[in-house]
Amino acid sequence: MKKGIVITAICLVVVLAFLVGGQIFTVRHVNVVFNNKTGLTTESEILSAVGLDKNNNIFSINERSLKKKVTDRFTDNSIVISDVVRSFPDTVTLYVRERAPVFLLKVYSPTGDERYVPTDKDFQRGTVYEASDISPDLKLIEVEGFEVVDTFDVPQLTLLRSIANLFLSFGLEESALPYFIDKVVYEESSLSVVLASGARFVINATADADAVKDVYDEYVALPEAQRFNKIFYVGVSLTD
Image 1 (tube, rainbow, N blue to C red):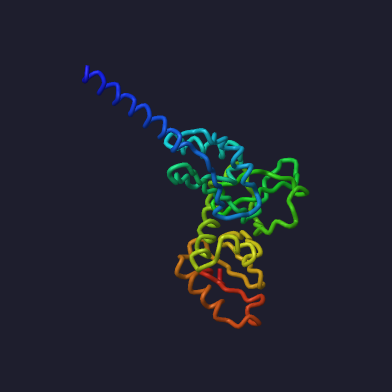
Image 2 (image 1 turned 120 degrees about the vertical axis):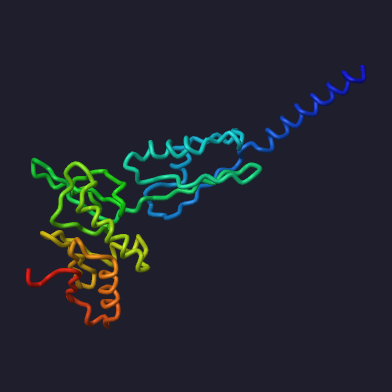
């Protein structure tokens, strides 16, 4: 008899703990934190995309599923969830990263239409727009002498990404790149980076990072008045 009472009591305790725990660990707060706010989306749109039910148990949240829902909503890969953090007992925070457009690339058109794709420095964005649909308020680095045909996976863009990452390693923020660099021009065996100051870095495709860094330091050391239209050659032979 006593044994049955003990077992019943244990069962009641287990059930009560389950019920109380279920209430304690029910998601009641969902926060959205933008790592870099560019205005491409809103908190409410992110919450709508993930469809996170506040009645869910905090332990049952599938991070991979939440991330996929956002990439499914933003098919140009412009918005991604970089992290999902559970704060016990009842709060979930979604960290959102927006792939800020940096470059404006022309897209090949057999009919000659003016079509462009704004893309981030890693070429993870890919929505093509007509020229008239590109906002004039969108500050981007124009790329001349190259057209996207089928893919971003080509040597020219591999070089461009390397150059962009190199300038970021000098201390520039990604969002500042389009204000520092006006345009990029592809030439036969080199790439010219034209700065907003009017200075131009003519960089051979085989030039190493240290050579570019030396020229950048030389540029920064100049008084502003002497930077205008100054040309710097990096690994480029003037006799070729």
